[in-house]
Figure 1 (cartoon, each protein chain N blue to C red):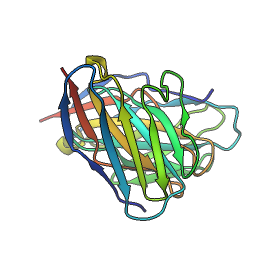
Figure 2: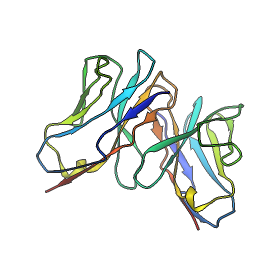
Figure 3: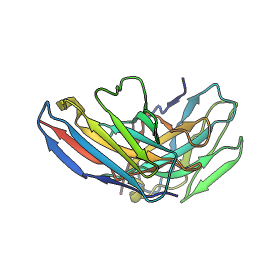
Length: 112
Length: 113
């Protein structure tokens, strides 16, 4: 298994600003995933991040809006650029070292 | 692409009654991995069940599910619901180990006394 930690737990920001969400794993993992979840709705896969390479984004998500860094095997950062009220949601980092996929505690973002 | 369908958005029932949540999937991959995740309020999703084997029942914490490749289904069942089962349940699919799961839209289960 793997334990994932996220920082911050929650954040409130103004429209047009940028914010960073950090994810740290307690062991090395090949891939980290980022998901977006609106209030009690589905978990949408945003991107897959592997060490030393550019993240692969799913349809509807772009690197300009949601740049992701993966500098090493235990760390990843998701940035939300030019935040808008429609970006208000929970962001989860996740990893799947073997069969089971594990999630961080999530970061609740509110954009005013 | 791969997809997962959960037909019920909300299931409300009385404690002690059986629960069944539907899950069907689409993939071109012949050996998909199927999962059920549960998410309680203000928590992150956690694994409830998983299966990679056709027609084999898998059980955990009173819940069970059987992967049926012939019908592309992986329905979740429990014989007697408890108040603590109130949560959001997601069915998920993956083609192979290491790749990110694709989640269905989720089913909210609300159990009342």
